[in-house]
Amino acid sequence: MKEYMTENARELPVKYRPDVLVAGGGIAGIAAALAAARNGADVLLVEKQCMVGGLATSGLIAGYLPLCDGNGRQVSFGIAEELLRLSIRMGAQSELPVAWLREGTLEERKKKRYEVSFNPQYLALLAEEQLVKEKVHLLYDARICAVQYGEDRITGVIAENESGRFAITAKSYVDATGNALLYELAGLPTRMFSRGNILAGWYYYSDGKKVRLRPLGYAEVFDEDKKDTVKPLINRRFYGVDGQEVTDFLLLSHEEILKDIRKLKETSKELEPTAIAGMPQLRMIRCMEGEYCLKETENGVSFPDSIGMIADWRKRGMVYEIPYRTLYNRKLHNVISAGRCISVDDGMWDISRVIPPCAVTGEAAGTAAALTTDFTELSYGRLAEMLKKQGQKLKLSEVYVG
Image 1 (cartoon, helix red, strand yellow):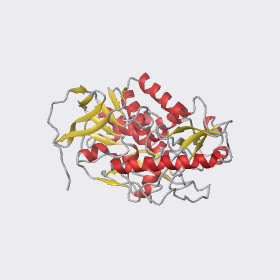
Image 2 (cartoon, one colour):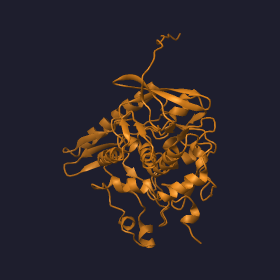
Image 3 (spheres, helix red, strand yellow):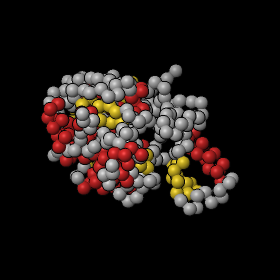
Image 4 (cartoon, one colour):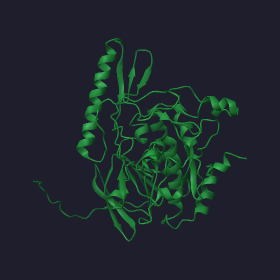
């Protein structure tokens, strides 16, 4: 039998009144906040971790996957490319994509995709520096607990941090939480990733000569060039929406990391761990159900409302336009999604969850949020014009000429 406790009703102070509230400071949130601020909005970015970057930094998933199609053509531009270059400004953890950084020939670009492994601490610090420089107001260590919802829009959110519980009211909201939290709290349709996530425990260690990333429990699907198969660390899947399950994920992840370190130290006495993730490495949790659901089978399909393009990081030659309609639900006029919680099917989820798609959708969402308080009424032509001015290419025809 369940036991309940009544929480006393209370008035909460409205501490912040930005034009745009960006919920979540991962890559999508960073891109959204920068885009909104650059288009004149007063932006508040709320992040529950103590650094920006999400899985890419706190989660140590330090692979900036391709901005190109694998056949020498770049397909993702704008802030997606800006953040890649930012991530390696103070050095990279892998070979630099020189052919792309220095305008190499098509044949040179075919040999190595436009991707890189970066230092997650550098990216977190440099991205924060950029956000502060562009006058984005950051609020760390704050968790959104509830929303006030009425007449097809969110009127405010309730958050909590060391100062206690407080309210935020904004004109527009960007849900870059990675789990469609604003939509879920507002009672709108969302869905979980049907297969669940495998256990992961990526960590860094020093072997006495170099600091290395140990991707323990790799991604569900490997890059086609590696020809590997995934052997899960344990026979259990995780969905990421239950507090105890998330704790189980972390405990088991730490257990596997410690086991791996002990095994490696048997042959390398100088090995020492240097960093473990500060958040659960759950890649696909929950997404919103938008006006359109983008499918994995829609490779090469052109949409009338495309806001940018992304490549399949696993397979060469697979390129997708992202419809604006995947970013919003008509029942919630002043909220738009970005990153890992846009409206996609399960197959597309594994493609759209990585850094370049998060940056592409984040830039589009942030730009739209600066332009309107009703995403269902925003002129696509106006949004497209702004995105193109910012350096984004929206259509396959802009890359594949003739």
